Length: 539
Image (cartoon, rainbow, N blue to C red; front, side, top):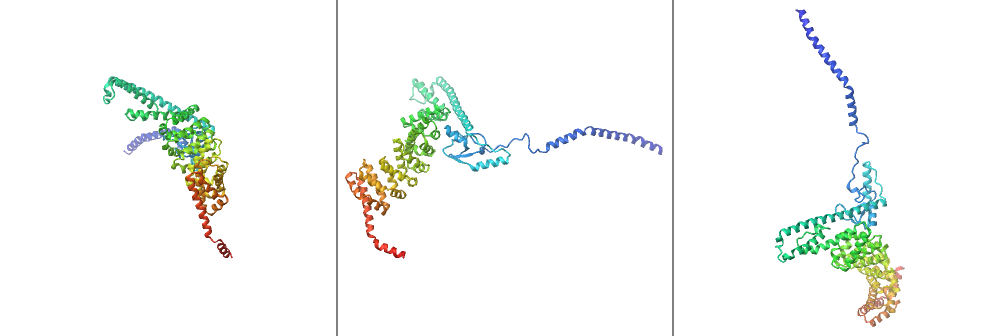
């Protein structure tokens, strides 16, 4: 029994042991066969999971939109702030000013390139961003590249306007055909307008449709009212403005020249055009053309601006559009005929009291003083009248004195040039404390008395202005009295009565009263006692 049990164990355990050994050997072989691919996969996976120091296919970081110049489309190396508050690459701004182009920004606004201020804070921020983002700092754009970019924008802008005009014309033709077909099929469409008979309905519709066609070709939004009378009133205005703007923005110089000449003509002959053409868009276009290097464009642009400024409602609007700085640039270095119109424009704008201080702050006083010696008589006279109206403001009077205008004006007055207009300016300065002191220092009393005594004043207004100026200087105290005595002012003023100018005689009597009053004050003072008291005080 024991032998049988032993044999049974041997028989049972042997196959189990053999099977286990076979399976173990099989698994060992499988592990041996797949060892190399697994090891390779682990190495490859480890290589992928380890980030490289400089990824080959990594995308560069996109800069913020505030760092991108709208004109060049790249990072700004030399950002500048313009008058309208926008920031651009400096070379692009200069190219726009040279080419007379004002781009339309994505928000439909137009920048003002009249003044440029470096944006150092943004430049430093851009450089820090490039350093932190491992991006090379931007390089400044050269002038040739900037001009090419601007010319490309000008061509794209002109093509855009052309496409809009073509699309508007096509849509108008389709709408006209549909409406005409509907009118023919249903003649009762005019039943709501009993004043129009059936025989004239086609003619009246044709006229309205033609006006609407002209309007939709440039600005479809203008046709917003169903009234034919409103269409007839608004359509020509909108069409003129759009046609002029399209040519002013053209890259072709001859088209710009034709547009400014046309604008000058219609604003001179048609007074109603001055109101509806004085829009922000048109003023923005003119602002860049005023400093054009082409004489015809510059001259006609400034002349058109003069015509627009003749409308009283336009004066403040023009100054607030940033036109004054370009006009000042024309006075400093523009063409002679353009300077003539620029002085007239400043004279016209200075008639509005709300513009006087702004024009003085924007730097127009110094160029206007220089234009008093221009070879053009019209430029001299308009500059003098502009200075007269600007000197009605106290702040401008102080600026004129600091600019040294008093000796210049008195020198021109002695030479006999523009006596009447110069006396108007000096009269305003005489009522300013700084101006009064400057005139007394420069020999103003002797000059004015000499004009009255020499009979060089031809008109009554010139006599009155001269005496008015002396009356303003008479408030200078004892110093004026001494200068007046030296110039024999009392004798000369007594002769004013024979001139026949009532206003001049009244002012002359006041000046004589002021001189007499000063004499009485001197008599009341005991100079001996006063000097004795001073000597005792010094001891």
